[in-house]
Length: 439
Ligand code: SAH
Ligand code: F3S
View 1 (cartoon, protein in one colour):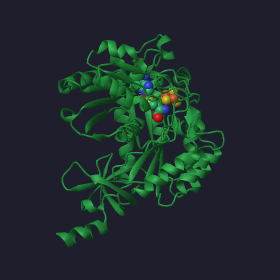
View 2 (tube, protein in one colour):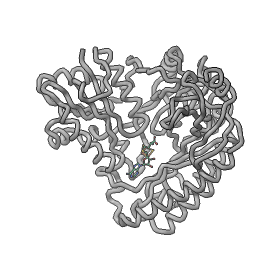
View 3 (cartoon, rainbow, N blue to C red):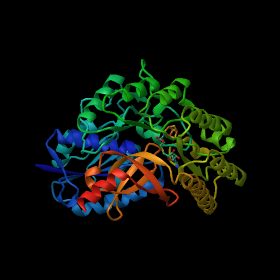
View 4 (cartoon, rainbow, N blue to C red):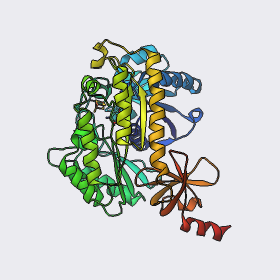
């Protein structure tokens, strides 16, 4: 029996791809292990979006060398593998395999060859590859990711993803539905549909609105989420489907990147400040309770203090529920490399700190306003802290509640009692009653 260890970095699609790798190699007789010491095969599923992500991965791959015994295989897969290809084999002599996101089907064969001492690289794009026949590895959780689209056809000038994941392609609706039905049969009630610009999903016949209606219509599915949409792909039909389908949750992660039209233009985001505000308004008309989170980059080439102030002001205007904030990281091979006008690192760092403070303040004000209200939550897991359980509202707010682990996977109504500014504590009468019975 061969044991497989996989470490995952980066976005949710990488998490879903790791499940896929487990499915593929499970079929080939591998069993999962949580410790690299025990593993015969170690894979690192990587991210290439920012340089600090890559540096961390270099460090980790260096550490994993310790656990590599004779005959063991160490592979680098995912976006960094795709970006660097054979270069990575030259740079790190103890790496046996370099495989991009479209090459996982070849893993059993490449691992076999690596055991015999052959090092290999597979970074070809395969536009047909959706891994349709691979069973999703499910671990008994109530929530699952479902990749519905791979690649990206946008060309945001800062972004390496079009180069690491290739052109956009969408799965057939029927294949997605079959996967969702299969997940339901293992106990899943919540799915998150994944794509780089997920709402541009189109397979020639069906669009994203059709997909939301179909997934929301699967018996047993109680919540439908999706990430990440692009502001330009919220067609009236998609907004209508979001409003109509009861399962579609009141949360959207809507990457903004900047609040300055001048910067947005240089980023080739294909919307300006007003366009973004318009999208937010249309979402709020379709779903009045919708929570909105975002991604923001500071220090993009040419960003002035005035541009940055526009970003801060847009955070206040939209009243985001939360944001991931990043300092711009130059990526070889992206169009932005050619834009001169670099923002000094200390200036970008200082802007990032100010932005984080603004985001926190805006989110806190919003969240404090929610204390006292009641929400449906899905209980996800035991919280890191003490005896509590972690649950999530439809609006994607994390709520810690008291209750027994047997509640994991169930839906409860909780009253929000307090907030740290970002997460909540709450009580569920039903969960309390059960505790009292046991206690
Ligand atoms: N469309 C994808 C985006 C993937 S990258 C999705 O959201 O699903 C995730 C986020 O990383 C982007 O929204 C952007 O804010 C940030 N990012 C991408 N390239 C970056 C770079 N070169 N420097 C800093 N941040 C970057
Ligand atoms: Fe990247 Fe823009 Fe696509 S952020 S993934 S190029 S939409």
